[in-house]
Amino acid sequence: MARLLVVDDEKSLCQMLEIGFRKDGHTVETVFRGQAAKRKIESQVYDLVISDIRMPDLSGIDLLKFFCETRNPAAFILITAYASMETAIDALNLGAYRYVIKTDKLVEELKVTVNQALEELALREENVRLRRELLRVFAHNNIIGQSQAIQNILSMVRTVAHTASTVLITGESGTGKELVARAIHFRGMMAQTPFVAVDCGALVPTLMESEMFGYEKGAFTGAMKSKTGLFQAANGGSIFLDEIGELPLEMQAKLLRVLQEKEVRPVGSNDRHSVDVRVIAATNRDLEAAYRTGTFRKDLYFRLNVVTVHIPPLRERRADIPMLVHHFLNRYTPTKPLQVTAAAMKSLLQYDWPGNVRELENCIARAVTLGDQETIDVQDLPPAIRSEQSTSSEMTPQDAASLSTTALAEMERMTILRVFEQAHGDKALAGKMLGISRATLYRKLKRYNIALRGNPQQDEKEAAAHVAAR
Image 1 (spheres, rainbow, N blue to C red):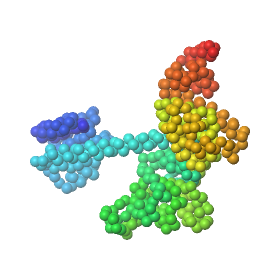
Image 2 (cartoon, rainbow, N blue to C red):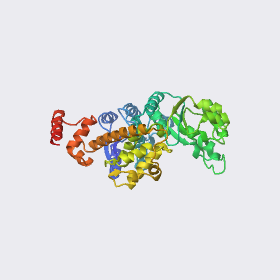
Image 3 (cartoon, one colour):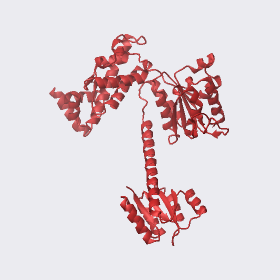
Image 4 (cartoon, rainbow, N blue to C red):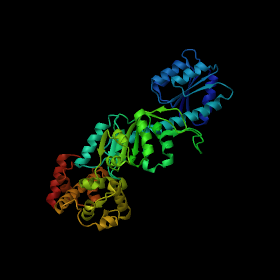
C-alpha cells in the first residue's frame, strides 16, 4: 500500500479522493494550497502525488517542476477541469506520469491510474535492485584464482572496463569466458547500461538475422508484429557474442557491416537504425587458423581482435583449484564446513579437467549431493577422476607432491576462515564445528597467520595456555 499526497483547492474533492483511496488501503494526506504541498514534499516521502493544475498560490505545473528538482523517485499525476493539448504535452514533457481530466468518474479513473503508476514504480525499483545486485556481484572478484595467469586477466579487465574497445575473449569451453565478459561490462563505465548475451552456437541459422537485427511485421510467415533485435536491445551498452566462431559466413558478412556502419536494418525493412554498442566476442576456436582456412572472415577477425583476453585451461593453472573448490563449497554449502580429504584433493589436482572450471563446479556439486555432508573423499568424486590415479603428463612427481602439499594447506586455511566467519569469531564454536580442540585451533590460527578477534593480548595468553596444556 502506498503513501499518497492529494493537492487541490477544492476541499470536497480532496475529501472524496481521500475516502476512496483509504478504502483501498493507502495512506492519504490532503492539502489545499500549492505552497503547503511544496513544504510537505520537502519534509516527507510520498509514493505518489496527485495535484490540480489551477490553484490560487502555486500552479500544479510549478509544483511538478519543484517535485522533479527534488529528484523524488515517486510519480506525479496532474488533474484539471480545464484541459488543453498544450498543457498536457507540457506536463508530460516535464515528467508527469499522467494527465487526467476531471469528470464524474474521476475517482475510478484515478484509482486505475494510481495502480498502474505504483506497479511501474515497483518494477523500476526491482530493476534498480537487480542492477545493484549485479554491480555488487561483479564489482567483487568473482574471477577466482591466485595464479599469475588469473592476475594478468584481472589486470586486463580493470584496464579494458573503462574503455569502449571491442574485446575478443579466447579459451576452451568452461573456462569462464562469459564471466570475464560480464566483469568487463559491470566493472567499468558501462555498468549502468544494458548487457545482452547471445549464444551464437544456439541460434537457428534461418533465424539468426531476425534475432540479431529484428524484423518488421509481415517480413515472413508468422511475423505478426515487429520485433526489436538483440543489437537494438543492447544499444548504449554491451553485446556479448559467445562462440562467435560458430556463425556461418553469410551472417559474418552482415555482422561485419553492422560493426563498420554502426547501424542495423531489420528483416523486411528498408530503414536503418543507428546502434551504439560495445562488442565483446568469445570463442573456443582458433579464429586465426579459421580465417586462413576460409571458415572465418579475415576482415571480421581483425575487426573483433582489438583487445584479446586469453583464459588458460584449468590444467595450466592447477594452483587455482583449491581456491575454486573453496568457492564452490561456499556456494553449495554456505552454512556447513565440509572438509576435503588429502586423497580427494590430490585426485582433483592431478586430473586434467577437459571441461575446465565448469566441470570442477559440477564435480563439487555432485560430491556435496552424494557425500555424507561432513567430508568429501575420493569415492565422492566422479568415476573419471577416481580412475585417473597417475600424475598428469604435464606435471613431474616432485611438482605434483609440492602442489598437493601447498594446495592442502591453502584449503585448510580457507576452511578455517570460512568457519570463523560462520561462528562470528567464537573460537570455542569454531573448534567444535571443525572437530578439533581449542589448542589445535590456536596452533592453526598462528600457523596460517589468521588474526584473532577480540583482545589480542588476551587471545595470546589463551593460546599460550592451551598449547602449554597439551
